Structure formats: C-alpha cells, structure tokens
Amino acid sequence: MSKIDSIHRRKFLQYGSLLLGSGLVVACNNSSNKASSPITSPASNSSSSGKLDKVTYGTNWYAEAEHGGFYQAIATGIYQEHGLDVTIKMGGPQVNGTQLLMGGAVDFFMGYGADAIQAVEQGIPKVTVAAIFQKDPQVLMAHPNTGVKTLADLKGKPIFVSGTANTTFWPFLKAKYGFTDDQKRPYNFNPGPFLADKNSVQQGYVTSEPGIVKKQGGFEPVVFLLADYGYTPYSTTIETKRELVEKNPDLVQRFVDASIKGWYSYLQDPTPGNKLIKQANPEMTDELLTYSVQKLKEYGLIVSGDAEKMGIGAMTEARWKSLFDTMSKGGVFKPDTKLQNAFTLKFINKGLKSI
Picture 1 (cartoon, rainbow, N blue to C red):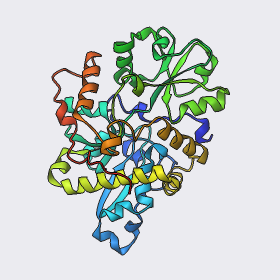
Picture 2 (cartoon, helix red, strand yellow):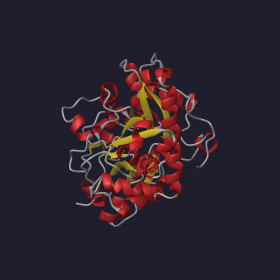
Picture 3 (cartoon, rainbow, N blue to C red):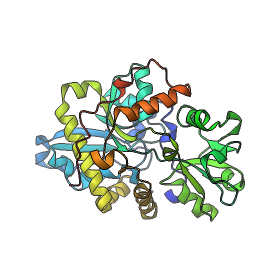
C-alpha cells in the first residue's frame, strides 16, 4: 500500500504522554523496513568529517515533507558549512524522543510545545530551542454539504479522535467550544468509518489526511485548521538537553541556524531534500511530497505570524504563555508549572532571511 493510500501515523502517537517502549531505539534506527540506515551528511564518508562536529537529530515520524528542511540542509551542504556532520534518525510509531534525548541516542529531537511543558512537570531537563512550525498542522475534517461552516458547528457531532487527543487538542475544544466527551469515537488511523458516516468528523493533518480523503472518498472535506481557531502550540520544534545548551551553546546555535537555512532552501526548491526523504522512506511518493509542500505554504505553517518578522524558528514568551493558560484551564497543565523552563529564546528571533 502506497503512502498516499494509508494514513500517516505520526505525532498523534507521541504528543500526549512520555511513553516507554522496548522497541524504541529499534524504531528510531530504521529497522522498520522503511530504510536501511539513517541519513548522514556526505562529509561523514570523507576525510574531512573529523573536522566537523558530529550531531544526531531524531525525527518524530518516517521521513516526509514535514521534515524537509532538515533533509535539505544535509542535501545542500548547509550543515557542513556550519561545521556540522549531521545524521538524521527517523522516528516511528513507538519512538519516544524524550527517552532518546535523555539517554544520549540523539543530540536534538523534533518536539512539540505541549510535550515540552509536560516534560517540565515531570522534571525532565530538556528545552526547546526553536520552533519550525508556527502553526500546528492539526485539523478536524467534516463532510461537505452537511451544514457545517464553522468549527463551532461540529459541537454535538461524532468525532473520530485518537487517544492522545485527550492531552493535546481535545481539552482545548472542550474549554473553548463546548465539545463534550460523548462526541468522541475511537480513531484507529483509518478513514473508513469517517467516509461511511456523512455526519461524522475526523482528526488529521492538513498536509496529509484531506488529500487522502479526497483520493479515497472522491470529495473535498471541509477542513478546520485548529491553529486558526485559537489552538496555539508550536510544532516541529528543535529540542535538546538543558546540559548541552549550557555547556555548548555554540553547537546549539550552529545547528539551529543551519536548520533554519535548510527550511528556507526547502521552501524555495524542495528537490534536493525530497530526494533524501525518498531514500530514507521508500514508501514516500512524489505525489504526497508535492501535496504536503503545497499545504505547508498555503496554510502558512512555517512562515507566518512572528516568523514573518523574526525568521523561521521564531518563538515568543507570550505565545508559550497563551498555550499554557489555555491548556491549564482545560486541566492539562498544573497552574504552578515553571513554564520558562520549557524553552529558551537565545538561539532564534534574529530576523534570519533566506540563504
């Protein structure tokens, strides 16, 4: 089954809690038949590799367009230009980035705003140093011609959501729009039940599931990007151990700068990065890559809001506090959590433009 014909099972399986699994390291090392080895900077096979700082970045799912800028920075030599020999290790459904990060299996990991705050509550010393996605790609989809015009219109309808929605976007929907738990239906990452019930709603990612529904169901779903309705977490973040930030800030700065440049390059011409993505994940198709990149731009997931002035990767304390306050009211976070420990602004917000 091709990638476009199967649902992406990505971040939903990780965001809500810090799960431990025996298959964790195996999944991150690509033994899931997705690829034979991690993607590494060309310099790692040359005599010059000894002059570069070796860095490993772990992603939260199999290689896809949503990771494009990182692969682009390898493909175009941007990491090398910043003195880095970078290896990207793919994630998967059983990957726990926090465990990998704390255990030293990776130096940086692709994180998520809400999870970073939960880590603080659990006393885990990791910190977010940049946010590539200004908008979380999370959407709810409804059938057309059913009278649904706004997100509020979904109140009372059956909604297929994953278990981790309970600690991510569902409390937000309950607190702000009055959604109730009796609306929830178990979502097993299969669009079949949604396609069969015209009155139903399904979660998804704007870069993937709407296209899959169109292909399999033959119609354009009504799509609500939750980020446009007050759901404000940063996504596709770069997080690392607090120890590295304190002891080697220069390395952190170079990795952040190079990754940001990689994303500017990818949005201009994704061809080099996409080649590596397909190498890492043979099930990825050109069709889905093209669709995903289009949606990244169309919805302003990367370049919007603060990033338009302060550059890709931008974060603000006010934005973090907005998420914290909203989710605290929903019972997700403890009111006395030390929010400032979840992130640092010292490596971003420099107005960095294209390379």
